[in-house]
Length: 309
Ligand code: SF4
Image (tube, rainbow, N blue to C red; front, side, top):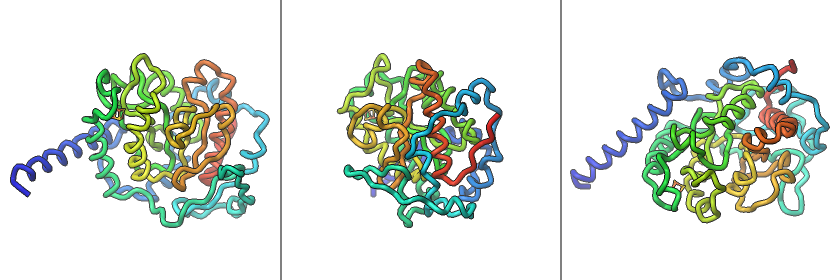
């Protein structure tokens, strides 16, 4: 390798490190401790940042008729969630595969090989974010102000995947920072988590003009970034926010009303499709369905449901 190549690689690594440091700083990190499973556990339901507005929480937690599949889904033990649990949480009901291969009623257990993110994975995430920042693989690059890679905790067991950046996200460089993002934060808080305890990203990393839905070719162009991103994060559960997120993960479109609340599997990771927060802003009554889906996610992860207020 020539001296010029070495300098180029050093420059790339320096940029990636800077990107990662800025990202961590924006997430409230004041140091860079080694990320471990214990970190998540210690920062679990007891470390709730702030309180949820009573009205929002009451709406999110309001009782509703529950889908038989979701209600029957007891948490399934996984390699990544190997912490001790209540005995009842370990007795999962029989999984009922559908003719299409979709798993109904309970998310499938994860392969035992999953060990969670490593320091190397975090380094590669930073490099990937740097690569994405210069991407011109599809036409969306032409009108973006900046790419929007992710926000949150790279060691999180829970990942939310949305559609694509809007105007606020394009401006600030982070996903879900507008009104829909504020509602997502309330949903996360209602789960007993803080916004910095989850990982949030989108199907496409550049803003579609006029906030239109990304074209299939744009989704396909950006798919390798998402695939590598999720592989590196290695979450236990993915929440797919809206039909486009489901389409981006599974390559098939369909009505989110039909798909939500039904577990799917992406490369061995349990996926819960639900409504996008932007839809909830237009249809507040659907919050009840979303809260049911998020409760199923908590059960799948072996976490206690927050008490009702
Ligand atoms: Fe590249 Fe994805 Fe942006 Fe298209 S949307 S230019 S594939 S980063």
